[in-house]
Length: 165
Image (tube, rainbow, N blue to C red):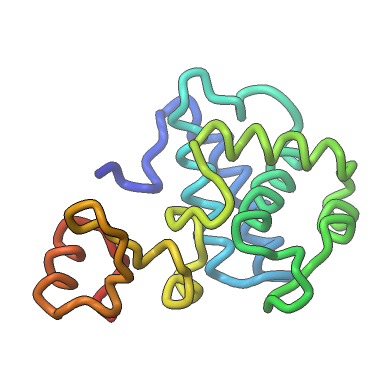
């Protein structure tokens, strides 16, 4: 598995500038988990060939990264902590909501992400994430948290679950 922070040499300045912006935003308005996910997502986009980050305004990409991760992690749901509306998020960046939403969709498609995607879920939320624990045994879906310990250990070894419950 690649180091989540490894980026091609020619993309390093863009990555550093982008992460500087998302780190500051997450420190002020969200949390460290969002900041770390932003770093990992920025690195994944920098590794794309060609990278979509090579063109366009940095603040739009930064806003859109947070927006994309916010979609996956239900940032726009008032019952979540932290919570922020899409309009508020975009206003804080000075980016139009439709622009950020469209770029966020492009970002998620680029990395093959979708709602409830465990790869882009905040680690503190994985314990409650319904898909993080689904495994298939002989064609039957099973919640690994209810499986015998040896099956849980094998699922962890295979990378099918995030940790042992």
